[in-house]
Image (cartoon, rainbow, N blue to C red; front, side, top):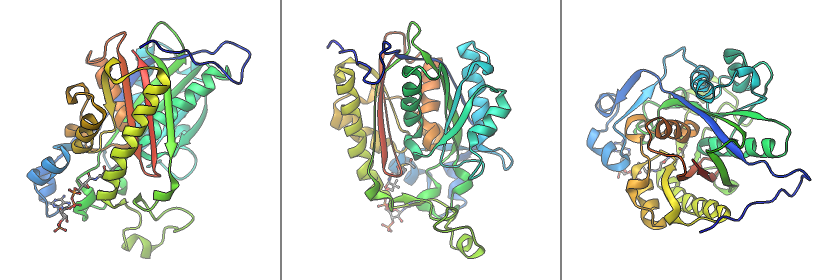
Amino acid sequence: MKRQPRSSPRSAKPLRTVSIIGTGSYVPEKVLTNADLSRMVDTSDDWITTRTGIKERRIAAKDETTSEMAAKAALRAIEQAKISAKEINLILVATATPDMLFPATACFVQKKIGATNAACLDISAACAGFLFGLEIAQQFITSHTHDTVLVIGAEKLTSITNWTDRNTCVLFGDGAGAAVLRHRGSAHGVISTHIGTDGHYTDILFMPGGGSRCPITRENVDLNLNTIHMIGKEVYKQAVTAMIRASKKALEQAGLSIHDIACVIPHQANLRIIEAIADRIGIPLEKFYVNLDRYGNTSAAAVAIALDEANRSGRIKPGDYILMVVFGAGLTWAGTVLEW
Ligand code: ACO
């Protein structure tokens, strides 16, 4: 089906579409397997594999921060983009596990990579953050205010994991992925993005402690309020619904059908969620890029790492239409269609 070009509602200048000119990713060296976890809590490789598809995850070193992982992924993306870090005008870091509540993790990344000409801010949209970042980057670039934007998804989820709660500790891992965006070159263009939120579900996936509502105290830490809380079954249900809706909206906005899509890069939370989406949306499971067996759920980093792996391994090829679709706490969701 032929795409209808979008017009720019706010600018007299022609709309500049946006390209991803480099991707990069980083995962920590340390591997924690399901067998390792079964020695820590009452679980088994069989339970984790059949319920989630996860076999192992990466764990950052104690002194390895979110910004360090983000910077390593960013430098790989910058190298592939063949630009200097000084050409970057804006750094957006999507994360639920910032180095500190403030300043923004993006500021630490700026210093580490020497992007001295960039404005920096973090995006708090949980697992949907990287695609929220792509949309924000696209808006800055198409409105001609910024030329080159670095978008990063980075998480040290193991720093907010309750290692005594088998319901959650088996699911998460650490890592970072990055993309450099610029006004359209010859390929790898962002065609459409749909982002959305429903604040009625803030109580199914959240970390209660550490913010203004429940500041850190000794008692709160004793109650594990500084760790991830989740109602797994409800999250599962909402994830499937939201990701199907986001996929449909992004495709519709792009003027494409499911048959045009060569590869789907979904949020890497649970293989059963991905299978349900494949089934209900009508795209064969073989078209979905899956790496959660190796990394678990790395929240905002997940699709960014997967995009980089699909790019570098040749799984996505020039001319392919790619659907990225994510879901996270908030609830937040997003779908993006790329032409590679
Ligand atoms: N090992 C063994 N048993 C377990 C484990 C475990 N790791 N975790 C839970 N169980 C037990 C439960 O205690 C329960 O036992 P009970 O029946 O005696 O009470 C039983 O297994 C079934 O538990 P359920 O919660 O019903 O299991 P379910 O089939 O729903 O699977 C899961 C749980 C995997 C968490 C699933 O609900 C899920 O994937 N939800 C989505 C989670 C998710 O994706 N979160 C993040 C998305 S957003 C983001 O990325 C931040």
